[in-house]
Image 1 (tube, rainbow, N blue to C red):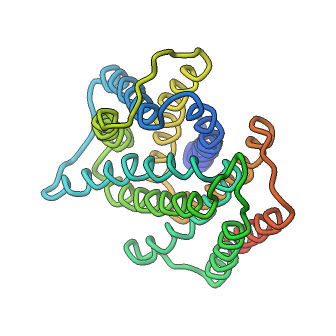
Image 2 (cartoon, rainbow, N blue to C red; image 1 turned 60 degrees about the horizontal axis):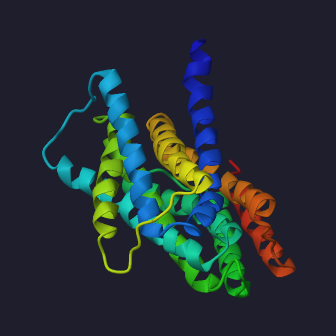
Amino acid sequence: MPEAWDGVAVPYLAILTAMFLWSSTFVVLKLVFAVFDPMFVLFARMLVASLCLGLLVWLRGGLRYDYRAGDWKWLLLLGLIEPCLYFLFEANALRYTSASQAGMVTSAMPFLAALGAMAFLHERLSVSKWAGMVLSSAGIVWLTWSGQPDAHAPNPLLGNALELAAMGCSAAFVLIVKKLSDRYSPLLMTGMPALMGCVWFGAGTLLPGVHWPQHYPLVPSLLILYLGAAVTLGAYGLHIWAVTRVPVTVATSFNNLIPVMTVLGAWAVLGETLSVTQTMACGLVLVGVLIGQRR
């Protein structure tokens, strides 16, 4: 493989693949939550990811790490933020808002990460980045307030607010990964959250009101395998690996592809549509995204 390709193109290809996998999550979760209890879905997803990661670690003969005093706090926080809190926010968001609207709210993540990178990693923000942030934020607020309850979104205000909280968790996750990237392998930083999520959501399935399935329909069961192996393991692994090789603001800017992919997927698979006002709000979000990516 040519050195230029290996040094430049591969991280971006990894990020693009991760974005495609993540964009499918909103549609797949809508389908799976209609059959299984959300807490069971999250536990099963983490269990599948943990088993796959265990196999990878065994095949690779171990993990690379350089532990330093106090790192346990960052590793623990890494797993607590995502998947534990992130998935709780996102799973409940999709109970109240549509996949299309939740996908559009993900546009806030690159700007949240950029603010964090500026504050903690001393990465600079340009004027265009600030302008794009303001416009996209205004579009997300407009989208949220213009949403009307329907079969796909019974409470869009609450659902979109929960999705925004999930994006805050995602931004914090990326910043911690960047901080630890010189000492821990991408596989370890993928496996640690998966194992914590397995324990966290496994305990959650024991709570009152959580229902274990009596039947396991084929298609929803296969979709859970997809969420665990392809999305949790594949997307997170690829994204974490890429973040260790490019600046945070560059890596997170690709998250702006998720809204477009999600809206198209929700329209094709779930039959979701946006009102004229919501479409205009989405347009404002995308304009802000484009302005924010100008150099």
